[in-house]
Image (tube, rainbow, N blue to C red; front, side, top):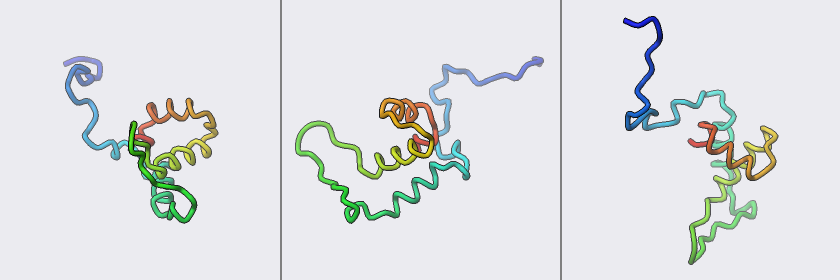
Length: 94
């Protein structure tokens, strides 16, 4: 028995659970943003959802709006900083 807390082996195949939703608290603003944008009628607000015939598929406008609103609430205005935040913040990954 060791005097220290033993951590998990970092070389194991899965460190996080299969569902990241468990890591996001119920009070996280990302949950409110998700529900709010899902309830909007994006077509009536002028968002066009037309997939391109060639090239890489675009992100859905609802996903980008959620990211933009999160950035606005957290004073993250740069698209590059929003990208870094989306890679770092578990609340934005869900």
